[in-house]
Amino acid sequence: MRLEAVELRVVELPLRFPFETSFGREETKRAVLVCAYADGLAGWGEAPVMSAPLYNEETVETAWHVLRDFLVPALLGQPVEHPRDVRHRLRFVRRHHMTKAGLEAAVWDLFAQRRGRSLRNLLGGVRDRVEVGVSLGIEPTVADLVRRVEAFVAQGYRRVKVKIRPGWDVEVVRELRRRFPDLPLQVDANSAYTLDDAAVFEAMDEFGLLLVEQPLAEDDLVDHAKLQARLRTPVCLDESIVHPHDARKAAELGSCRVVNIKPARLGGLANAVETHDVCASHGMPVWCGGMLETGIGRLANLALASLPNFRLPGDLSASDRYFHEDLIEPPVVLERDGTVRVPTEAGVAPRVRRDRVDRVTVRRECLRP
Image (cartoon, helix red, strand yellow):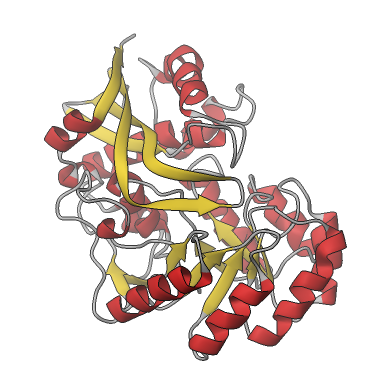
């Protein structure tokens, strides 16, 4: 297979509700979409970068530049035998994991369509449904957060994750646990604390949380190991795991007991599958996180989450959790039992609504050899 052309788009979708974390507030979802063409087919991928370099170093502008000037030219007109080859072909560019993931996902989509097989099948998935939870940002008041949790629990979500930051942590979680004593609950700090704040997480041990996600620095493994040794609650790493070998090091150091796998953060689906396998070999469960992806990225994440070691509900909410109108049809829907169906189509493209993509596109460029 040879890529004949690659189209880049920047899209902007208003979020149904603002989403606030320890590092910022989003009201509009911006992302870079990649559409790769080969053999009469179009394959879609998403680089769910943010407008500002807050989660990692990438932004919409850097993703556009790196794709247009480096990554896409490295693949255009060149033979690609398998999507796993893409990560090796793009190694000459350091990091820019989400950007690479968007291009690699488009190649996976092409490959699935050419083979007439679903992404779940190609990646080694074993489930036709996956358990999902909902991720809630920081709200103006605890009462507002409680109301949001009540609404999503009523919809059937099996797990709730809430964002925390210094000053919005122990008492917030205490009130949630009081109101929802049996709810599977976890918190996400997005690297907002240091080891000096260990008492905050020791206090949370009494609440029976599923896990505490990324409490310390985004590039740390050592201090996380020290913190995990002091807690009964499992530490889960997110930003610290950007390559399969990071998962191995974290397991060997005791830095965490759970890993959040985001294909975008890891540079693509191939690295995500390898990270899943590394964690499984160490007896460490994983779950699939998200970056407020549109349906294009979400469908690929669902396929990945069907692999056997994804043992905790993922951040794979229904399309209407974030968007009034998603870019796919049919949308991702929450089933009554708190699960979401894994796509069975040959790739993502059959569900992409190009007319909707056109409506939200604010920048577009087509690259050819």
